[in-house]
Structures are given as C-alpha cells and as structure tokens.
Image 1 (cartoon, rainbow over the protein chains, first blue to last red):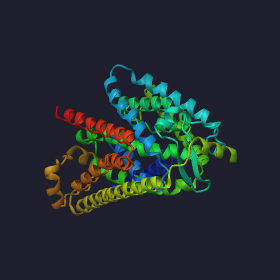
Image 2: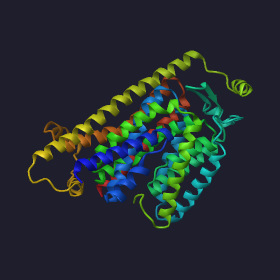
Image 3: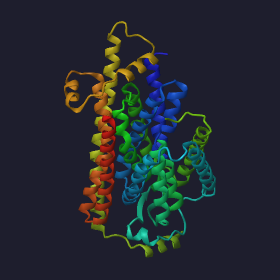
Image 4: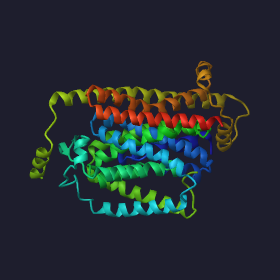
Length: 283
Length: 152
C-alpha cells in the first residue's frame, strides 16, 4: 500500500467520522482510533492525539452552521461546560485512586441501559409535558429553535441539577479515562433535562470541542500529534462535519435518535471490552 | 399538540423582539469568526500535507512504505515553538504549515468561549458573563497546568 492510498483511506474514514459526529453530537474518535490502531497498526499515542484533534474539528466544523441556524442552546452549553471542565480537572486528580477497568465496565453498562431506554422514545419527535424547573428558569435555559418541519419550537428544560451532575461525571470520565464525553453530554440534555434531540446533539457538539481544547495542549506538547496523521484526519473531519451540519436541519429528531442509539451501543461495547482488557480505545 | 404549545407559551413569555435580534446578530458574528478560523486551519493543513507529499516525491531514496514514513515523521517531528514557527512557514517547511493549522484549530473552541463572553456582555446578562468567564478561566488554568507538566 502506498502512502497515498493510506492517506485517502484515513481521509475517507475521517469524513464519515465528522459526518456522524456532527449529527449526533459526539467526537469521531470512536471510528478514528480503531481504524488507526487495529486496521493500520499505528501507535496508540498517535491515534489518541489524532482523536483529540478529530473531536475539535467535528465541533468547530459543525458549530458554524449550528450557530448560524440558532439550534444550539448557548446558555445551556456554557452553564454545563462549567461542570464538565471542573469534572475533567478533578478526574485528573482521581487517577490512581479509582480502578479504570471497573469504571469502563460500569459506565459501559450505564450507556447500555440508557440506549435501551432510548428505544421507548423512538416515536417521540419532541419531549412532551415538560415543565421547566425553578433553576432552569433562573438560568434562562428554556429556549426555542427553528425546525424546518415544525417551525419555531419552544421548549422547556427540567431536572437541571441532574443534568449538571451527569455533565460533571462526563468531565471526570474524560479527565480520568481520556475518552470523549459526547455521549454523556447528549444523554444529560436529552434524557435528564428533556431538551429536544437536535438541541441536545448540537449543543453537545458545541461543547465537546471546548472540553477537548482544554486537554489538547498536553497532547501537542508531548509530541502525540503526528502531522502526517492529523492533517488528513482534520481536513476530512472538517469536511464531514460541514456536510453533517447541512444535513441535520433536514432530519427529524426521531431520525437523529435512531442514529444515536446504535452508536451509543457501539461505544458502550468498546468500553466494556476495554474494561475486560480488550483494548482498542486509547491509553 | 396545540394545547401543549399554548401551555408552553404561558409558562414562558417570548422575549422582546429587539433583544432576540441582537442576540442573533452576535451569534452570526461568532459563526463568521469561527468560519474564518476553521477554513484557514483546513487550508494550512491541506497545504502542508500536499507540500509534504510533493517534496517527498521529489526526493530520491525516500520511497519507503507508508508505515515507515508515518512512524518516521512522528518520531522526528520537532515541535516548532512560536518563535521559529513563523520563519519555518517562510521557508515552506511542510510540517510547519500542519502545526500552524493544528494550533489554529485548537484555538477555535477557545475563541468561541471568549466570543460568548462578549455576546452575553452585549445582552447585559451578567450571570452568563460570569459563567462564561469561569469556563474560560478553567480552560486557561488547564492549559497552564499542562504547560507546567510539559517542562518536567
């Protein structure tokens, strides 16, 4: 295989990762890391470095369109980002205290349960009967977003403390295990705070870039960012994310959820396998 | 469904139109700044990669297989510090373009948070100016903590 062919395969996979990541609000590391490590035998540290850059590219590539289309809930993003970033820092302190394998299995299982409960919401286009709680009103979290099919959708936000707590855990996990926290962010906003699926995935998408940027410096400084890998990954992911951000407004909330659940299960499976010592995930 | 919507409207009266317009324009501004950053970054990355491939193709004896090349670049990649990054760009060193692209890309989310501070300040939403400054501060603390770790 020539260098050119290798770069083209990496580019094509990155395009797909960016596309999916932009739609469901996760970084595309789930596709990039196994491709580089399992399929191509690349050193895991370069794969993780590429995955961090991939997350930022997904986030920034799609955020342009999502901000312009006013789908992102910027207040929710900033308020919850406090929990995630502080979580990430405390996660770094917990390294060595908690057993990572146990955590991988525990949170893999949590994601499976969450995926199962999502199935019951497959028919639901918008959350029904949500009453904003006092904290949500105080924080001005209830908002609206323009939906191509439904018109201007006003939505309420509930169970803010629970959402905040899940976001904190998401941050701890990303600080402790070095995994992306995208799925937990989507679950916090969708399942706990009952925000519409599009708002949850685009707001998560906006946030994952900020969380990843917090730790990107260390990977760059440590020399884990291999330019020959990162260049095709970043360009491909940016292209895919731009494409995804054009597609999302034309999808239904139902459609996005149906895409999110299998991906959630895939990530859960990776985490549980890693907990049992089958590694293709990083570190 | 219609009842549902009415109920929601009662719970939450719509914000005055002016306030909404202003917020929307600022979001557009953030989107525009972000777009310039993202496209410049993509351009630098793509240019660096193509430049590398062209230079490699013109060098005789550099025809090892791709895996060797990727490992070689990873192991011998010297991180340009800011001072020598710009001269390296003028010397058309391919990996300097890639590094500039990566740094710009990493900065885009941080720029987004910084721009959001301005957005909330324009809306006179002091609560969110505070919240966003906390996020920005934690990000910067994180960076400096990392920089400290890199030294040792």
